[in-house]
Image (cartoon, rainbow, N blue to C red):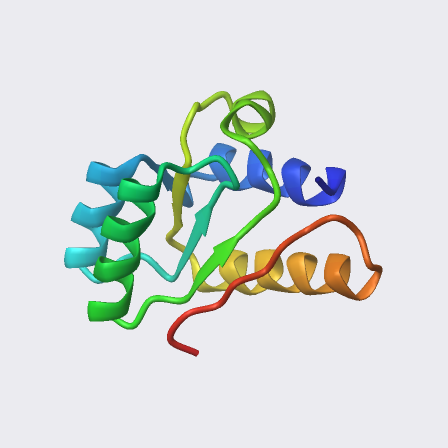
Amino acid sequence: MNKELLSFLGITRKSGNIIFGMDSVKKEILNDKIRLLLITQDISENSFGEISKTANEHNIKMLKINATKDEINNATGKYAAIMGILNENFSKKISSLVTENIEKNENIIREEFNI
C-alpha cells in the first residue's frame, strides 16, 4: 500500500472529511454527503455486496484499495473496511493518488463503479 495514500487518509481523518463503517457511511450516502467510497481488500463479501448496492443506487464512485483494515487503522486510528470521503477536493486527491499508484505499477487494485 502506498504510504502517501495512507498518510493522506490520516490527514483526511484529522480534517473531519472521512466517515468510517457501514452504518455511518450509508447514513451519509442517504444524506447526499459522500463523494467517494473506499473499501479495503479484506472487506467481507456480504459487506461488499451491501455497500456496492447502495453506491450503485446513489451513483457514488467506489475504489477498492489494496490495504487491510489493520493498515487503515494504523493510518487513521479507525478500524474499518468502508470509508466515505465527504469533501470533493479530498476525493479528487485520493482518486489521483490511486491512479498514480496504478501508473507506477504498484500493488494497488482499482475498481470503479458508476463513473
